[in-house]
Length: 430
Ligand SMILES: NC(=O)C1=CN([C@@H]2O[C@H](COP(=O)(O)OP(=O)(O)OC[C@H]3O[C@@H](n4cnc5c(N)ncnc54)[C@H](OP(=O)(O)O)[C@@H]3O)[C@@H](O)[C@H]2O)C=CC1
Ligand SMILES: N[C@@H](CC=O)C(=O)O
Ligand code: NA
Image 1: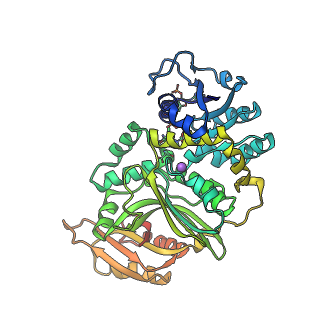
Image 2: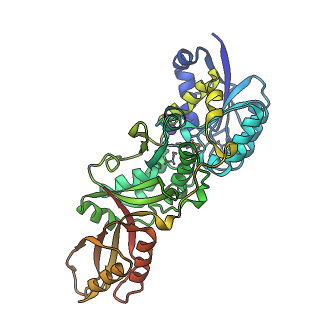
Image 3: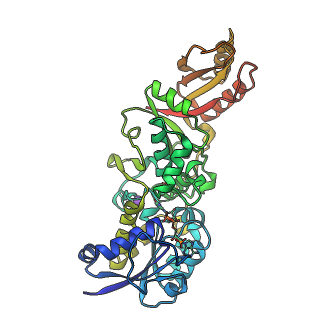
């Protein structure tokens, strides 16, 4: 059987999974590709480190040039995280005539224009299914299967680590323990701050916004809040009111453009998105011809991510990626079809928690501040103070308003004398 020689750069969580699929399940790749994907070289930083896969001798190297300068290697899975040296290696691989597969969304979100333009100019391809929602085939679905549609809305749980942590907190676990466990299980980025502060979800959202809407959104311009400041109290109040908190990435087509943001959001318990737990991801897509679609599956972790990488390697080896790559609306190959909408005008309902002194008239002051911003209250929850002098939490669910009005009301509320801490504010969706 014909052989396509392939290389892997980075043999950590994902890379080791890819090596295992290539070495232990070559029959599958041969069946689908009609050829053997032959692992020729795997590049790491530290040759002495224990690996989560068994490699035949002669494959492991710490010299990236063993792949770049090997004319027999046609397809390379580039599986090191972060920007440098990933960017330089990626460009060198393309220049050396390799087709590249990657899971590195940080790199694509930051330098997508440069990388995709270079690939197009050099007649090469870049496949990146694993970069968004891990094992869920979302890039293929949006980039190819929905091309007869105008996507109008895309809501996603795109960060497995945050979702894992939120699920653990929901079960009563402590935040820091949950972060450490996500790291141990291989879900988190090398720097988990990127997961919990909304960066990773914003990077993935910017990639989806390019593909689905032809938007040219820079991930740094996407308003984002992570789960790092979230308190257990809010998880508990949300639960008491019949909601679960999820880190939701939102792209909605509205009259003045594309509304984009990443925000901790209360979702009605029992709704499909609210029940996505652990390292799972989900993407809800509304599109004009097909209607509503839900994609659900493991968004992080070794084998789910490796599954997406190896499928991309097969598509690349048989020449499918080269065809689809040219048709994708990525970065600068076509003008932007839509501009980001002003976040201040984004409409929705909000959850507010304010810690207040338990004095007469405090609730009236807060409702006055909301009323002055044109915000109508849908419900209020307050428990009796457990000990005299202790502040009480006032939880308010609003009717629909704008982001700007909610922000302004919170500013006013924060300045009130009886209010102990700045209000906690989250989006609220049914
Ligand atoms: N983990 C997951 O669930 C998912 C990860 N991703 C993305 O996949 C990519 C890889 O993630 P993951 O496998 O978790 O990361 P790891 O940190 O587990 O692995 C990174 C690998 O890259 C190697 N490496 C780093 N720098 C260099 C260098 N300069 N030269 C050669 N090798 C280098 C490391 O070598 P050494 O081992 O010797 O230190 C290591 O093997 C990232 O972009 C991540 O965002 C995407 C989806 C899911
Ligand atoms: N750290 C990421 C890994 C997948 O992209 C996540 O937790 O989602
Ligand atoms: Na994916």
